[in-house]
Amino acid sequence: MKLLTNDETAKLIGLKSNTLEVWRWQGKGPVYRKVGRLVRYVESDVLAWLDDQTRQNTSQYANPSTASA
Image 1 (cartoon, rainbow, N blue to C red):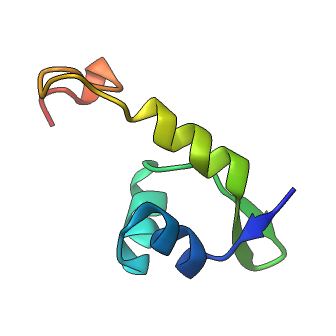
Image 2 (cartoon, rainbow, N blue to C red; image 1 turned 90 degrees about the horizontal axis):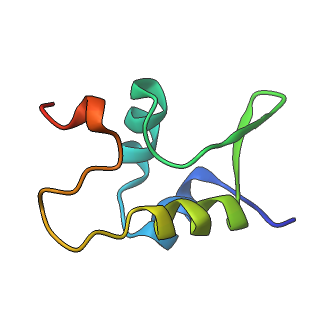
């Protein structure tokens, strides 16, 4: 199991690291682990989350309850 820091995960996804911080607060994004006070992402979880983001058109949503948000 390879653990990634917030910065490493953001770089892997192509985001700014503070975006992941906001997403954690909002309950979005890939799942993460708390190791003491540290936030870590398991690389395979991040890659699985990325696979789940695949869409064929803009009307497809991952969660129907957020479709109007």
